[in-house]
Image (cartoon, rainbow, N blue to C red; front, side, top):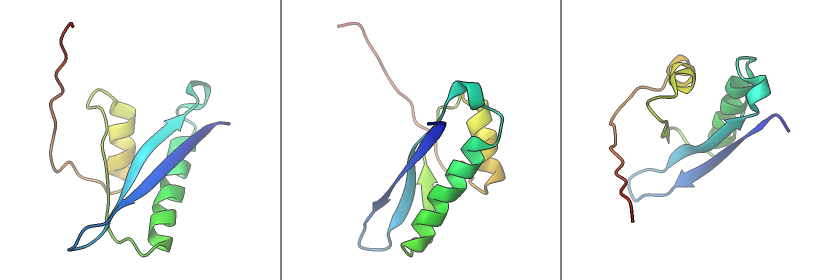
Length: 87
């Protein structure tokens, strides 16, 4: 397997929104268009279910993914901060 794209739909009273929940590509195939093909297939799957908007979360350090999603038409609408501590 070269990779996968897991999508899901958030149902809300106003309007549903699709999400590219997880997208992963085998490291030996990075930079070959596999991620783009998987993302496009995931977005088609959402459109086939009458979903008109999509969202996703990506690590800000993942510049390759950021570039891909921007080329696919996504824009940054918010950023999040994660915390960790020793236990």
